[in-house]
Amino acid sequence: MSNGEVTFIIERFDPEKDTAPYPQEYKVILEPGQTLLNCLNNIKWTQDQTLAYRYSCGSAICGSCAMRINGKAVLACKTQVSDCVKDGVIRLAPIGNTKVVRDLVVDLEPFWNALKRVRPYLTPDSQDAPEKEREQTAEEFSKIDPSTTCIMCGACYSDCNVLEVDNQFLGPVALAKAHRFIFDSRDGGGHQRLTEISETNGIWDCTHCGECTTRCPTETKPLSRIEEIKVKAMAEGHHGNAGARHVLGFRETVGRRGLLDENYLPLRTVGFFNIPGLLSIMPVGLRMMWRGKNPPMIPHYVDKVGEVNNIFARFEEFRK
Amino acid sequence: MKYALYTGCVAKGAGRELLAATYKACEKLEIELDEMTDAACCGAGVIGEDNPMVADLLNARTYSLAEERGLDIMNICTTCQGVHVKTRRKIDADEKYKARLNTELEKETGREYAGTVKIKHFYEILLHDYGLDRLKEKVVKPLTGLKVASFYGCYATRPPEVNELKNPDDPDELESIVTALGATPVKYDERLKCCGFPILMMNKRNSMQLSGNALSGAKKAGADIMVTPCPLCHLNLDAYQPEIESQIDQKLALPILHIPQLVALALGVSEKELRIQTHIVRPEGALAPA
Ligand code: FES
Image (cartoon, chains in turn brown, blue):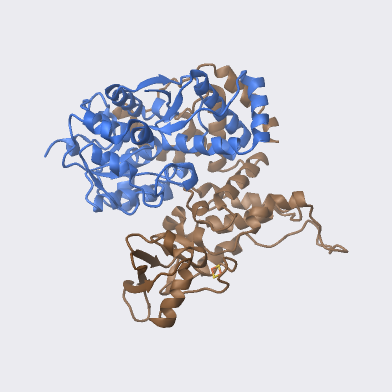
């Protein structure tokens, strides 16, 4: 890269012509301070007009230029090329968990559908229109400040590990959007929203892989928002699901012994009277027992466990 | 060298072979360990999803227990390590919150978290405190010819600000340990992905699919064996492998080692002492010299 030349290897695909995506190389002389979007424009304007990608604002506001560099989702207009050149090469591909329309342009329909599922609009308590607007204090706004910064670029959606294996999962962008309404002082549908989002495909299906927060170019940081929703759902008693029972199992055994009781937790999570559920975890239990790998039948207590009990004794108080 | 060993729950429960291997490896490396039998669960991110302050108090207590010993913490689980570092950063960044935690900690446990302790995973200690050159000198049974796929898992790599990897999106750290032990590292696409363990009880299908993708990726890349710094990943990848095989309809038979087991093997510890016979996918065949 001594002469500032960078090779862009861009994944090209036109479903009307090609059977599979293929890489195409472009050479660009890099000038200081250039963003990835600058280079793409340069390629399109001077080398290959057929290259397709999306952009609009060029300022990390509109969210239309998300793509994958070296396998990770970024905003092209916010990314300095010099930060991601590896051995003189940059690999570009469309964002993941979507279908390609052409080259770096993807079909965002499933992404918008996920958003629609969380009803991304205010549902106020009273349908009577107030005389003036519905007001909000600065303190009330601060709770939704991060989730309102989402520009819906799809970077989190692209790299979410769960979406890779299950396209029914709501995914980070929809969950962060749900946060924005669950925590909005002007919204009256919080209870219903929390009930819905605690069900299958919602908050408890997130595996906390952290990709969403790592890729997010704004302050939305979806994983933190999902964690906040979970805290609220637990505090407000949305306990009738495996995710919440799993959390309660942790609370109960760690609060008592200081350590997790791995024999108790699966039973608690599945539900003590859920016969099919219990049968489904039996094979692994027996397998582990057979190898002498099962957790000890008499669970450990940590030394000075009284200190841990004291902390848990004030559990409800420490919620505030 | 001496550390306060934070075992976490799994190394005391379903992953006792990890604790055994840690002791054996450290004995060979002449690293002294003071096991924190008084430290509680880190919450694994789960208690924090219920009550962040209780989770933070548990962890602040753990740090104060290490500070009392005058030792840095050695973690042997990347989930514990990730939670510890994240919590620590949160507390240290907010003086007011730290003061409030300390008031409650003092009231309930008579302790105080000062903020002096350092928290490191076993593999980070090898890399940064012990040094790979010194490790190489200790190798008596180089793992020549063994193709090892490192599985980092989530907490070792994300979020990037809470780990010490030079390049969290394309790290080399575990591979460099594998090389130091005489084995051959194998890279594959899924090495930084999630194993799915956190949702095992909530969505078993998705959880096993994630592990299945990783196992099958490593297998395709030619790995004889996989190594992980996280005993939770280990549980999914090893204990559930028979079910994963039927879900993805592919024979895998890929043994999974904890990183201290791999290290100890190269330092001459016997397989039996490392309790590899307790693994669901038995590693003996893969480890036998060709
Ligand atoms: S072009 Fe608008 S965010 Fe990049």
